[in-house]
Every structure is written in C-alpha cells, then in structure tokens.
Image 1 (cartoon, helix red, strand yellow):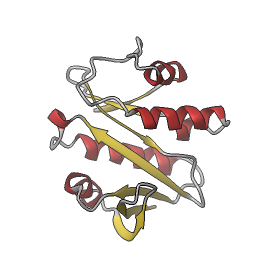
Image 2 (spheres, rainbow, N blue to C red):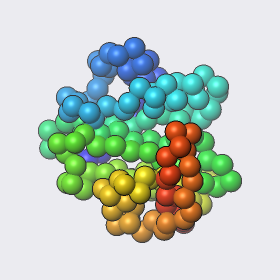
Image 3 (cartoon, one colour):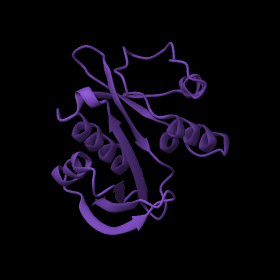
Image 4 (cartoon, rainbow, N blue to C red):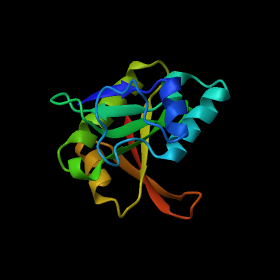
Length: 159
C-alpha cells in the first residue's frame, strides 16, 4: 500500500458527508476516516497547526487503487513524541495493511526533526492493533483512561 495525504478540500468534503472527487481510487466500506477524525484535523488546521501533523492519510492498495484504510498523526509532537491512529476496512484486515501503514508513519515521524518517539494508544481488547505494534517493535507503557472512560495501553516506538 501507499499513503495518500488528504487535502484541505478533501477534508471539507468528508466533513459534510461527501466523497472527495480527487480520491486516488474507490474506497472500500469503512475505509475512509471517521467523522471525528476529519473534524479534529479541520479544527487543528483552523487553529494554525502544521498540516504535516494534523491531516489524514488514506491507505491505498497499489494493485488496484482501492482505499483500504486511513491513518494519521493525532496532533503536532509534544516533548518529542507524536501520537498516531489508524484503521483498516474490515474486509481488508489481517493482510499486513495496518503494519505497513504504521511502519510508514513511524518512518515519516522519525524523518522529521524533533521526534524521538511515536505513541499508539490501544484498547487491550483490540488484539489486531496490539499485534501490529508488537510486530513493529513498539514497547508497552502504562495504561491511561481516555475521555470515554476506556482504558488504553500506551505503546511506544523510540528512535
């Protein structure tokens, strides 16, 4: 797969429930980023945050240009650490897509100045995502409780 960066126009289209005309291919069911991710990206961009850290990527299959998932950085780095999020359409899971996308996001993060760690917060019940970060060498840190009261294990990849 390769990562396609959504433009501001793409994000605005998704925010109002439209499929952007400029997408690189057909989106599988459940592959596009959820509304809260699009809204967060737009809010951060309006606040003047760096688009390289606040936009969203689509995971596109090379073979047929099918959009199979979405991923991105959740905000600008803080104290050398940047958090990532990702998802893959259900019918395309267990094919190494998330592993490839997360690996590429780690590469992008470490290629930029000032980033020394990448963070993924994962529900202990999400076995698939846990396997992804374990396969890539992330190390488990403590557990935090998110805004919805859900416990999340913090997984870190350090440079």
